[in-house]
Amino acid sequence: MYEYRTLKNGIRVVAERINYLKSVSIGVWVGNGSRFEKKHENGISHFIEHMLFKGTKSRSAKDIAVAIDNIGGQINAFTAREYTCFYTRTLDTHTSVAMDILSDMLFNSRLDKADMDLERKVIAEEISLYEDSPEDLVYDIASYAVWGDTPIGRPILGTKESLDIITPDIMREYMKSHYTSKNIIISVSGNYSDSFFDGLEKYFGTAPLCDSLPDMEPAVYTPKNMVKTKDIEQIQLVATFNGIDVMDDRVYSLLAFNNIFGSGMSSRLFQNIREKEGLVYSINAGHSAYLGAGVFDICAGMSPENLPRVCELISNEINIIKREKLGRDEVNTAKEQLKGSYILSYESTGARMQGAGRSMLLDKPIRTQEEILELIDRVDSESISDIIDTVLDTKTVSVSAVGAVDTVDGLFSFD
Image 1 (spheres, one colour):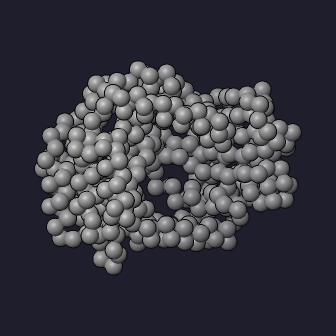
Image 2 (tube, rainbow, N blue to C red; image 1 turned 180 degrees about the vertical axis):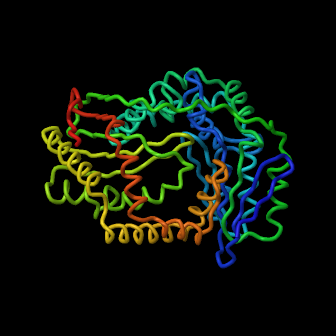
Image 3 (cartoon, rainbow, N blue to C red; image 1 turned 90 degrees about the horizontal axis):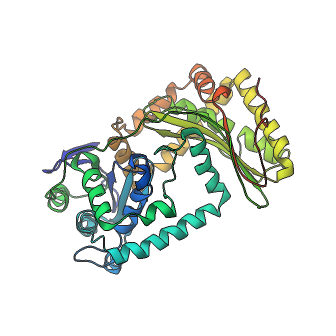
């Protein structure tokens, strides 16, 4: 059962009590990521994530780390296109320490210029590392290929140039308009006490916050092909198709279909292109869903001489599954796989906290495990046929690559 509260300053809370555990995961979710940034602000959301760990008015960066380490807890954060999450996992006896530290970071960070200049260098190294990782870089290129020079198409990390112009005052003003009471969710999962909500009110509910919501630019899918030529041994290739958005309940049919098609070692792509032909080291497919937008990607890594044949085989797999769809036995197998992976993943308080927090932040229904399993049970051959036609609409394909290649035009051939 989920409990819902609203703190005095407007921050909303969703909590799931699991009495048989000895731990609690707390996540502070902010409806802010790279999709909410103007071009000159690109990377500021991720920059803020880093800076909140650099110290507060009463704690140094080391103090934050030591306080969590001393209770055997964990603290971390991540930034995505539409949200940022700061989270802890501690024993149930130490939730007050976790709330104290998270709230202090959120509301009292120094945002010191010297710290910012130092952390700017750290993120510049992170950007360089990312650019040296073709399997990561190709996804940024693929996003730019379909969304263009828009907030959703730009890199989450930003660029070295965009980070250089961000000052402490710019960051404070950005946080004031984006870290608001209507835009912050606290999600909790684990064995918390009856007094836990009093602690949330004490640490989070008294902070004065604006009650506005930041603007978000609509995403317009406009596919084109893009290549970044690099002198490396492998080519990393992504074929992107227009997908479904984050509110679409057809996601369960999509996940079931992809269990057969492109997710995991038993999938058709892996078995028929890696295992039978030995032409790739990695190959997989998956979807990314956003507010009002989504993509379905097929990614493969191969030697340059194998590129034409790999694209021919991927084309064949797409043509076959669009023509023949899935048989009844495959549908049943896919559903059982989906149930198993879902149940196993939700034996973690962190996963449960993330699922509820993300859903509440995006105004999606927060469903119980029984409700999710019922939705998976409703998946059938007809719903999977529909989602195959939706996410493998070959008129929407965009091809991106990183490696020793000049063009990706004409590599795919669809019926």
